[in-house]
Image (tube, rainbow, N blue to C red; front, side, top):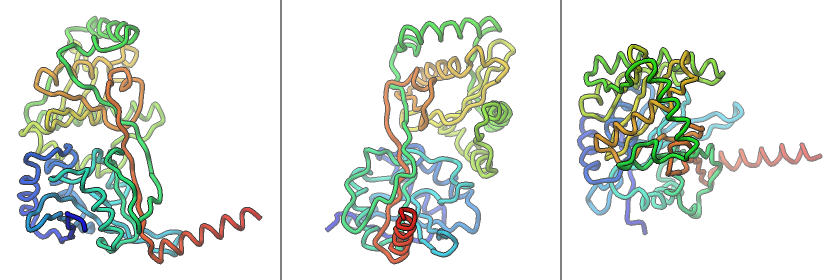
Length: 359
C-alpha cells in the first residue's frame, strides 16, 4: 500500500492554491519551473477554456506535495478519442511553447513520489488513458509498475550546466577554448569597455525583453530555425512573469555591451542558488565576435559573485553549452498508458496496418 495518496481538486481560488504551494516550497528541492513564480503565472495566463486541477498528495492528514494536472482529449486518426492527463502542462503546442523543464512536484521528495504516482494512474486515479510527463529529469523515473506501459519517450534531450567556482569561467575551459574566448573578449573590448547590466526595475526589464526579441527573431530566422516567439502565448506568459518576478529576484534580464555597442541580452531565472539560462538575443552583425560566448562568460562570473552555485544552460545541445558545461543530465518527455479500451483499439489498429504493409 502506497504511503502517499493522490487526489484531484478543481481550482476555484488561485490565491488559496498559492498559499498551499508556497508553504510546500519551503525547504523542498524544487526547480524554478515548479516554483509558484512559474506555476502561479502560468495558471493566471492560461486561456479560460483550459481547466487545470490541483493534484494534491497527502500522507495521513497532511498535504506533503502538489502539482497541476490538465485533462484533455486527443483525437487519433479522426475517430478514436484518447483521454490524457498532463503534469504541469496542457498538451497543446501553442501553450506548452514556454517549455517547462526540471518538471515535477512541489514539496516532498520527487524521487519517492514517481512510483506512487504511476501506481495511482495505473489504478485509474486520474480517470484517463494516458499520462504525459513533460520535461522530467530522467533519473527521477523508475521501473514502470504493472498496469501501466511506457508508450513512448517523446523526446530525450541532453541538459548541460556548470558548477560555479571561484575561478573565472575562462580558467575552467580547455586550452583551445580559453584561447578562442580570450580572442573574442579582446575583439569585443576593441569596440569599447565591456559591461554587463541587470535590469533592476520592471519597466527596464520589459524594455530589455523587447530588445531581446528584436535580436532573437532575425538571428533564428537567418539559421532557418523556429524562434521562441512563434506562438503569441510565449510572450504573453513571459511579460507576466517579468512583471511578477523581477522585484523578487526570481527573474533576471541582462544586457551586455561594449562601449556604445549592444552585443546582446540574456533572460534568466534564479532559484535556490541556481541560475537558469532560459533565453537570449544577440546582434547578428557582430556574430564573428561570438557575443554569445562573451555574454554567458560574463553572466556566469556575475552570477557567482551574487551567490549562485550553478549555471544551468537547460535542455538542448550546442557548442557554446559544451564549451562551458561541466555537468550533464537528461530531460525526457514521457507518455504512459493504461490498459484501457481506447488504447487497446489503437494498438490493434496499428497492428493491422503493420500486417497489411508486410504483405
